[in-house]
Image (tube, rainbow, N blue to C red):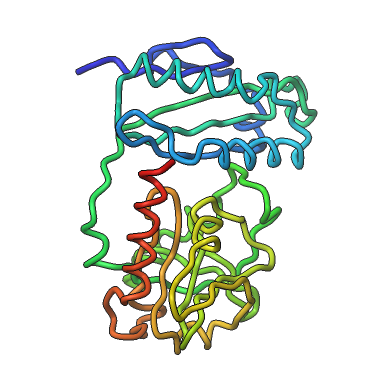
Amino acid sequence: MAIRYISINSKLYSEEDAKIAVSDLSIQRGYGIFDFLKTINGKPIFIENHLNRFYNSAKEMNLEVELDRQSLTNAVNELMAQNNIPNSGIKIILTGGFSEDGYTLHKPNLIITQVPFEINDDYLYKGLALASYNHQRQLASVKTIDYLQAIRLQPYLKEKKADDLLYHADGEVREAPRANFFIVKENKVITPKTAILSGITRSKILSLQIEGYTIVEQDFKLEEALRADEAFVSSSTKNAYPVISVDGQKIGTGKIGPVTRLINEKLFELIKQS
């Protein structure tokens, strides 16, 4: 088995030797940010968009990124060259740093990891069953490492026989823990705009032209989602992933719809061009 490498503060370590001290605020307080992008055939997809969000998240969390954009891109490329994993997921993590009192911000640690990731279209035929949950993510516009609620609720998902959560705030739809949410209703493709993380794939979908449809940011209620013609989630790993049910209620036909399928085709074209 080939050795996999991890980058910590611009130095490469084998996976088993890659370590940070327990005094880091990411461990002590769960304080840190990250961004995640995929590579296809050795090419990072939409990396500039991901870096835009990464630096914005760092700014919002008062974390200084020691590397400028080009240096950070070089660090990603160096890791990719060392690991030689053409199709992968790259995670760029910035922690709160080593803190003597376990509370005060210090110099952040920059960690870059890479894991194999194969893309196939099986999901187009399977789809997701979601379970709604009343929860508003803290600092929704920042991609933090805090996934406490989503992980805590894994037994809830099993109980509901669902694949993932759909967060709502007192009935107003927000997002899934790792993806944005869209519905298709009549001649509109709609995604919530309030208190959500603006995903990179979401932004690409908003830029698409779909004949006969307008794609809009517009808040809507859970009841409207249940009456949608189609629904899907979007993310870097899933593109546009059909949602077949919410809370056990079938959405549309309970299968991938024509608009979701067309959006996927257009996303794949964008990815090829990137």
